[in-house]
Amino acid sequence: MKKFLISLCLVLGIALPAFAATDMIPLDKAPNKLNDLSALQNGAKIFVNYCLNCHAAAYMRFNRLKDIGLTDKQIKDNLLFTTDKVGDTMKISMDAKQGKDWFGGNPPDLTVIARSRSGPGGTGADYIYTYLRTYYRDDTKATGWNNLAFPNVGMPHVLWELQGQRRPIYEAVEQHGHTIQVVKGWEQTTPGKMTTVEYDTAVADLVNYLQWMSEPTQNTRVQIGVWVMLFLLIFMVIAWRLNASYWKDIR
Image 1: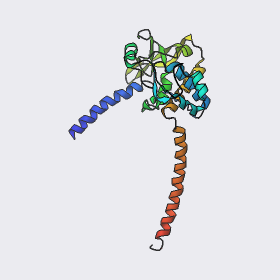
Image 2: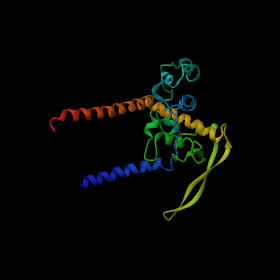
Image 3: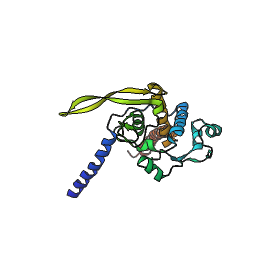
Image 4: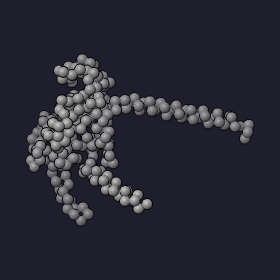
């Protein structure tokens, strides 16, 4: 029993800091637009243009984008590099060594990132939605950027041209007898190509695409699940009546 308690404490000691790292700030709820084909198509375009340079999606093929309403020609003309084919997986030319040299670590594959980032503070979509909207300028970092959802992040703000440059506005708050700095808002230091609403919409489209990419058949799964539950409910009623009819003479 003593060994079990010690092991439990060690596990909690490892797990709790991991949760704390992802819950530095409350996560914003990501809009759910998995049934909006235009939003998914826009998210795919943003993903290819801004994410697929450093991050791969090695378990997703380009031709799977036909499930969100794109044709082979549209995929080839708008989303493929000249050497890629529609049936190829979404790989990148940068290898692990280059990623470690340039960013301090190999950029993760994004195929299932929206599922792997789920935690006690919210879904993986909520985390990514918050993460991509809480970058700010920090000249003390090598990349010149920092993030509220992922402090000391090694990834620079690849969408900065769209969002512009911002800095957080802090306010001193008393908490448990200590004074801490809490973010109360943002100051826009350099405007971006998009307004705040436009940028939030673009990030929501990208997040929904990442969520769709992590499980392209999830809408079908939900639809089938509803029919399965209805079938089981009807079958339960039939089985109940058959059981009553079978045992009626014995009772």
